[in-house]
Image (cartoon, rainbow, N blue to C red; front, top):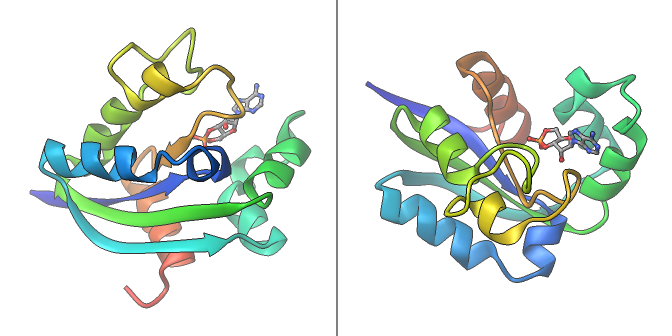
Amino acid sequence: MSERTLVLVKPDGVERGLVGEVIGRIERKGLKLVALELRQVDEDLAKQHYAEHDGKPFFGSLLEFITSGQVLAAVVEGPRAISAFRQLAGGTDPVEKAAPGSIRGDFGLEVQYNLVHGSDSPESAEREIKLWFPSL
Ligand code: CMP
């Protein structure tokens, strides 16, 4: 059964020219792009997207970072797309958790600057896709 997930290439990934690398890995895995848009995130969208982290010590810097430059937002579809992309991304901490061969494991060094985001459950995917692509 096919499912959808929201993928972001965060400002660090866009700035470093890793958009093609990330999209290439998604496509080579066999996942399909359903929507793709480069955009500047405003404070309101950032707060809604990261609502579950409100109150955490890094919330302020997370908002500042995600609104600091352009973000590539994508809806990606395929069988078990949510876990498939999370495997491509690697764990949140690019050094301690993401294995070499994953996007974060290959290109990241710091938890905040971890290059990509992928929805972590079917509920988050539904919420995040509605938030970023209300017309889908
Ligand atoms: P993401 O998958 O987008 O979801 C929440 C983000 O918060 C996470 O990736 C990291 O970029 C960031 N994050 C999580 N933990 C920390 C932390 N301890 N310090 C700074 N940023 C963090």
